[in-house]
Image (cartoon, rainbow, N blue to C red; front, side):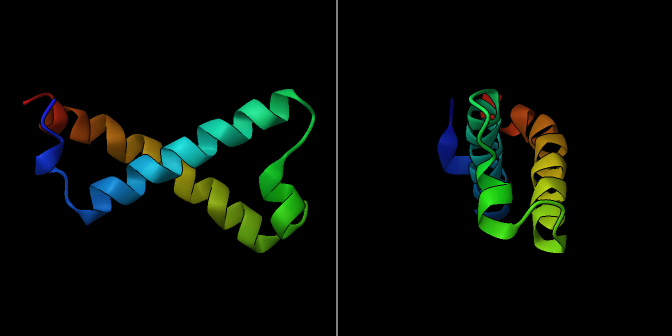
Length: 68
């Protein structure tokens, strides 16, 4: 894996994916960190969820860059 080819947007997307994965792990334990911090159903929480989802889609496309 050549991580040196990643740009700032790539790193942001990867960090958001990690945050999303950790939050899902906490949801399995009945604790949603995003909702705890920003409020259930708040606009900011919705934006965080949307950014994590978009990051997942983006990371699918940068996997080729990471592999080469």
